[in-house]
Length: 268
Image (cartoon, rainbow, N blue to C red; front, side, top):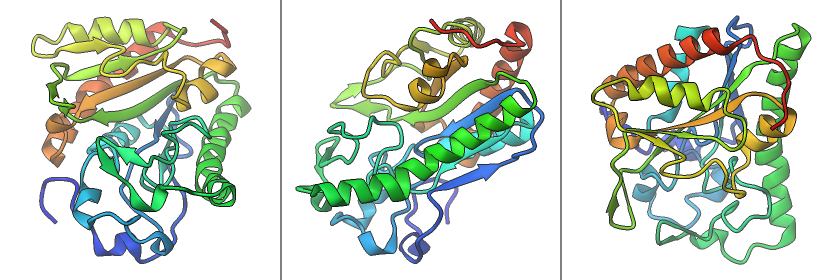
């Protein structure tokens, strides 16, 4: 294992693991961290989905560095976290079920052979075995906050490739949001104060895009303050980089939650 992320572990195909991982379930922070694209693991029964194994180390399979950032933030902030247990190529936990990108046949120009021409039974199997249990774990974590009378900040942690379709993305970090500004606006303002950081508002993707799922289903639809944070992958593709950005983002998120909270259920 090198310091860089994305190495394909032989154990990645050796067992059928849990579709989610929970961290720090008794954490005291009024924050829930969620990592929808945490890893590049595939169940043994699916092999590599017909791909060259090397491709599973690329951004098409997972959000490089995002899981490490999430783990570090969970520990530093004493915040509960839920991480996906399988590659987004199997089924994307941040896509609406049934959307063309939910089980992608093509990702960044690369065909996914074993995702082509799936019948309804296989689509339902992946939703039932991998998608719904992950989101059930997120629901359970949210119920834990409700049980102690807390409306948490829902923070989804992602990362994005620095080049897409030949375009070099200039942002270091992106703050994605839909209608609820309670976390996004103060986060944008605070992160923009860093002299060396270029912040994208609803860049490189938009929180208003209907294909997304996580912050809508668990945040906006419930009136819970929510935000999706994207960090550029070349900044966090080593443990040192992930440590630096986890500290930066974690400190900023904690400060915003202290400043803006306690929160109430509000629908925008």
